[in-house]
Length: 433
Ligand code: FAD
Image 1 (cartoon, rainbow, N blue to C red):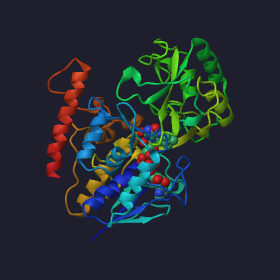
Image 2: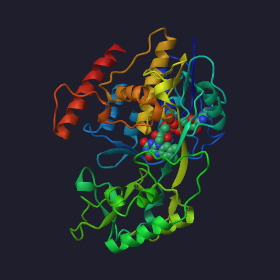
Image 3: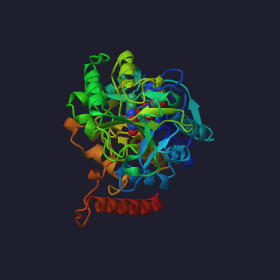
């Protein structure tokens, strides 16, 4: 029988390969690592998480929580592995990154219908294909894609937060607490006085950063903005962002600090913590000095510095159908960050649809459009119908859902209704697949 080629074994490609294989389709999965690395990946494992170890909210009052639940109903390899490798993170789904990637790799690789090739793909393969090479698609393939689409790529920066060794944190200065005591106490909090914040702020805005390359435009995706860029927007900006102190009163004093830096557990054994929201473009020397100005982190051992990276995505409103098929070639699918969905879970979700539809196509069935009332379908709808002139990547959010029949003012209630409608719709849809 005809095989499907999947290029890239990241969040989207691993999911696409899994969905194909579980439908009885042979998969040729191409992954260039470890033969060739990207600037952000460090391992040879599939579905490596290049920045935070959090897959964001697990709550059904949050669109990305609904998206995960829909993916569970569709037997997502990414979400089931994440559930298996979860670490405490309040209401979020965070994972031990090494266990998670190892788990995805093992399950996909060991599927009898999946054949893995550790090679860089330079051109667009013939025959049924899913391209899922991510924000750091190799240069050669980027050039081939450019000549296929005839469009210019858009570039922007992402940033990875620093990771520190737990043993090097001064436990007398920090305290364990989740904001408003929601869920398990999952974060270590470093409290700052106004004086400490002022000194920290001055150092941060004047620290030396890595110089940007000419071809890269400085546009950031929400939730991963470099801390020094945020700081430069105004002195108070960080106090409403990653350094927000509300709900984080210090249990020792009962008082709310002026500012708080939060540390999130980064691995199952708890030996590593990441500095939440501190993705940065700072050079390593100044970066270390600034991290060590944070109370409790005076002697922090940084095991991975924050770094900056390029992102690659195509103009989906012009080029893709909501089935994730390329408009000019029905057996060519795109998936992941390069379609303009944004985030780990969203990337995997698009891979899930592309995988299902590629399987349907080679089995002689029509590809399906997922209902817009679902989180997974609302993303596909958005990226293919957004304004092509200023298309920007998008996270899952309830704003992409069609309005409810009855207007509900209360946000929490409205979100609950969106979630209820989405899950009802997907349950019904799955039975027809
Ligand atoms: P990837 O997971 O990157 O997978 C693509 C795969 O294709 C890689 O394994 C790569 O090696 C391979 N590949 C590339 N070119 C070729 C080729 N020519 N031949 C064969 N293989 C190839 N999202 C979040 O939700 N939270 C975050 O904190 C976050 N931080 C990010 C930080 C950085 C630095 C970057 C770059 C992105 C970040 N993202 C984040 C965005 C995005 O969710 C992730 O990049 C996600 O991994 C995208 O999934 P993907 O499957 O599209 O790509």
